[in-house]
Amino acid sequence: MKLKHLTPIAMSCLLLNACTAEAGNPAQNVGAPESENLEETTAASPETLVTEPATPAVDFKIVPEGMTIETRFVCTDADWERPYTDDYSKWLLNLKLFPDEHETTDYEGITKPKSSKIYVGVVDMDLIGAFGKNGKERPADLQQCADACMRLWAEYLWNNKMYEKIHFKNSGGSDFSYAKWAEGYRMHLANNRVTWSKDAAPDYSYTNFRKYMSTVFMYCGTLSMSRELKSVRWQDIKPGDMLIFGGSPGHVVTIMDVMRNKKTSELRAMFSQSYMPAQETEILAYWNNNYSPWYDINIDTYSTVETPQWYFELEHGSKFVRWADR
View (cartoon, rainbow, N blue to C red):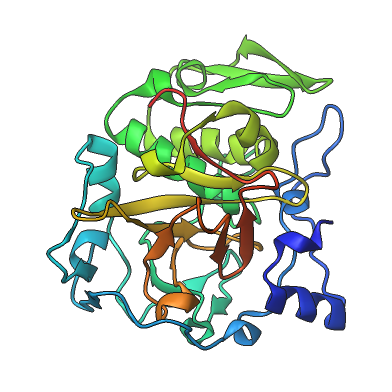
């Protein structure tokens, strides 16, 4: 476990309380799914992560009545603008949010209090669970950090019927193709390699898409994502890109929005995450900016991005990445 990647507050709590995480996914080994729980680590309880802001708030306001990212988190400074208008960026901006008072809920129905100051909003998207032999879905500890990132990208592609672009690789490099899955083919793993056989009728329904994603969640994670995704310069980030540290443990967050200063070219980014145990996707608060959702991105000066439950050190393996098919 690489404790240096925890926030200092989370690290101290971990050492004092000797917190451990229960593995919800199968253990990672040859021929077994890549465990997301092995890739993340237990941080402090949300209540212990409250800290005081060090700098003034940026020029923004939270509009509680706004039900999307674009309408709830409003920048009031005319010098800042959104430089990207591609379809995925716009799709993320228009994602529906839960009402402002909603608190993050995990797969067991346990809430993560908003008073923790970890997040400022929650994406209105349920958790995908596990499917039994009877075809019924049940809550399961599956949709953690990497899974939430894959879920956003896959939901966008599925909604736009870009089925061929929905595919993810496991740590062995095998490709999990949704197009094949929807045509009735099923994956069989041996020695961490995938073979396919035609075991079902074609089915492009949303229920079958959820079954596919549930399988992906079991076998793919931050380690496999970090190998599959292409790196991008911090100056070129846009909504839908990710900030990742791939490992065991590891963590990854999605960039939901980007603002650029028209005069200075400074960048600010908004991040979302899921965590462990599997929980709803939350919009992260930045403690150093009066708990706003806007993180100042200037890697030339500061090589670390400090999210509430993970420090991403750009000089020690963390990187900005993008889906290869984007």
